[in-house]
Image (tube, rainbow, N blue to C red; front, side, top):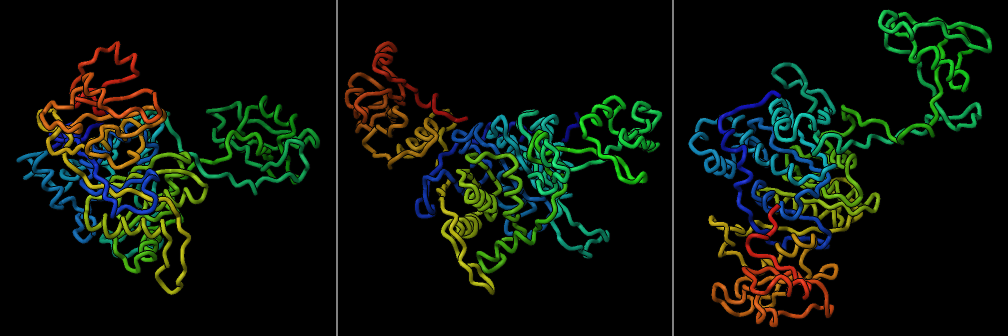
Length: 537
């Protein structure tokens, strides 16, 4: 398999494993709508944000769509497109070291993309699909990069998106650059396929009242010459008229003589009224395996201008350059997701993916959830956040027609990246507060947010599906000594709040346990030791 090499590659191939786990901190003031809808908008470097999200969503994401920087060298974008922002430079200096001084723009882009794509793969379900938008600047490198990370056998398609509606004469080469690409990969070979487009049933009729139902006709010409497939070259005779229809020399028929005879006897071959015509075959709608056709490899009919129009309609100004159109993302997402799937976008930009997910839910009553990550503080808080708020609550369109849109409903939690979960020795970092660790433990155990704000003096986090969850950490029981109250003993067990249901299984996190396994089992207690059994992937 061809491989791609560049300056700094050796430093980033396993870098995603070295990125520290950071806790997520919800900002209630910046959240919107129903905070328990299951949607997240995370502000922060997407490498660290992905690592922070991994314990919550590893192996659970059905669809990933990302629109990373295209590496055009254009400094004018709101989202810095030449991978030369202060955040990326700082990261490169730390991850790559002195080699970073010699990196070209393409080296930097590859160093940035490799660990992020590696982490994204870990989020995907076995039937998951990832879509990556790109243009001519890096499409060749990205294809080889994704072959290395996802495996060439998991390549599904290189879609061509006709992004520009009208021809452009400004190119130095004289060629109008009308298209972009969307690379499509699955998690495992054969694990996923696109649904395709709905079949146009209106093309199927039943003019002869055939008992097999509506049908349409198709050509029965083949593609093989007489030398290669002599069995497909013969005169086709209409049994009712004995008129012979000669076989086209360069194509032949689609079927052998024996197969064709069977189709004629079944009334599946339509002979023309004129000898100059060609026989055709009946194709019955009810006999087709699916109600869909294939998904086109060339996407047309939705353009970059549509994305810009959607932004202006909300903000009244072009506050974000070249946003993707919601209809494009809806088209892609809808090809792979179920009605309750998770959709992840770690280059969220203006938030098109979030809007697309909410619109799909409104259309069919689904419960799809989005997880968005945006690095730029200005973009995340002034554009992404406000766009999602507007579409959730409904907004008055900016422009000549002052029309109020229908609220999409739902909501999201806005999160910042908090302290690192572990220090350099693998212990829980001293800056980690009880409430932050409590949220992390409860969510990774149950998959849902903690029901109430964790209380400083209460180790009971909540109950989920009959199991009560407890955390002994940071002197929650009042003893501030390093091991005070953090070790599960018979005395500490007696101090714990009772199971809210009166009885039931319990999961207790603590630094150590002094109660025997037999007694724990009899009491219905599962003990998990800090920090070793905190879920991180």
